[in-house]
Amino acid sequence: MTPKPLLFSGLLVVMGAFSALGQSSAPANSDTAYNRVVTERAAKIVAMLNLSEPAKSARVRESIVQQYRDLNAIHERRKEAIKNRIEIASPAAKVAEKEKLEGEITGELKTLHMDFLGRLSIDLNGQQIDQVKDGMTYGVLPITYKGYQDMLPDLTEAQKKQILTWLTEARERAMDEGTSKEKHAVFGKYKGRINNYLSAAGIDLKQAGKAWEERIASEAEKARKQ
Image (cartoon, one colour):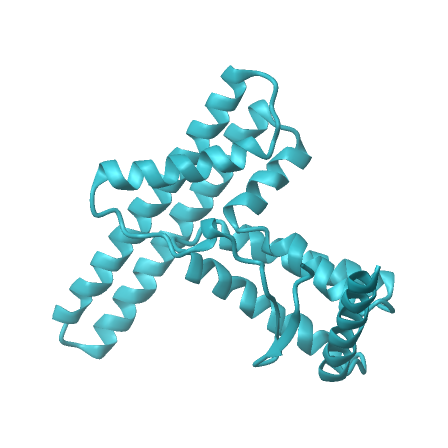
């Protein structure tokens, strides 16, 4: 079934974009349960790569699992630090502590991100690494990019390039978030930026979305009659 397009709060949402894997990541209540979840996720991502060498598949899977563990550790520590800030009486001190914390976390995530891509590059080519990135972000980039092109078939090459650039940047940022909700929130911000960009170019997204729905309904009706 073709996903139905919706325009909601200025953001393009494609129904069907979220697989069962896209549910929010549960906190690591127990190491065993958490490891099982991330191992299953990593295995599904690696399966999409169709790697022929078992040893290579195992290395890539373990790299992804370790990335999930490291991301979880950073975000859990961040939550704990934020919780402890309640004990700081001075508002100014709270702000300073928050800025310090965010700076430290951002630096750690950036280093972790680059190290992870470096490990993947040992066994995977650029296209395969992109597949891993898409797997870790629920395929939002390709689904959304295709959605914009289907909804707006008259996009210029420059507009397509800009949309893909922003979605790619969103994917890099979303990879480092700790939960499905947070990952999708990153894409949401970039979709808002894209929609503003298209609106500024004179594109009526509301009308375009309505026309897209009508095209999908028409195509579905033709397929039904065949």
